[in-house]
Amino acid sequence: MKNQLKTFLVVLLVVGCMSSVVVPSTVHAQLPYGGYVIWVDYTMCTCPPMPYILYTPLWLGGILTAGPLVYSYATILYAYYVFELPGIWHLGQYTPGGEMCWMYVGEGCVWNPVIGSTFMMGTSLIPTAI
Image 1: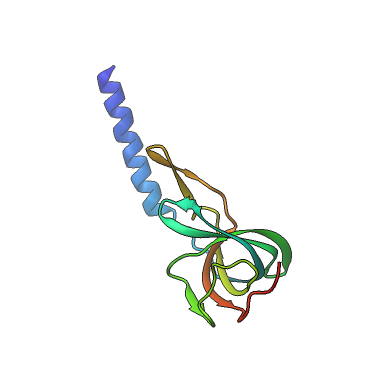
Image 2: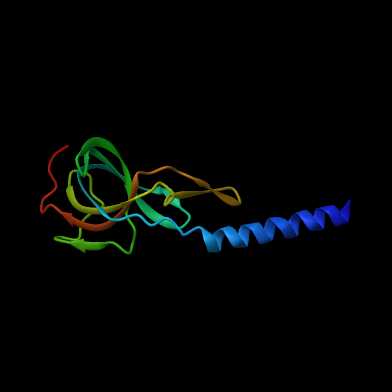
């Protein structure tokens, strides 16, 4: 029984290593977005810590919707460097994919779905009333 388990683990390891070599990683291009910030939360994405920004309306390159993006600290930030306040319009580029936000729970992290993460962002000068 132990030998069968060892053989299974070795085969699983070899197949896993080969699939990572043969199958390329998925890469997403940056797409345009624009939206009105209604809420910023620092407790939604804590593994690693990132601001969770909820937009409504949110324009995603031709689609009008509402939803969250995470602010990656690698984001190129333009204009007045204010992104945390509700009532500010953002315009920029984002990378689609909901794998960016993880929340610390107990001794591990759980996935918190988002639309994507910001790549480049410009902000409006003055926050408007909500």
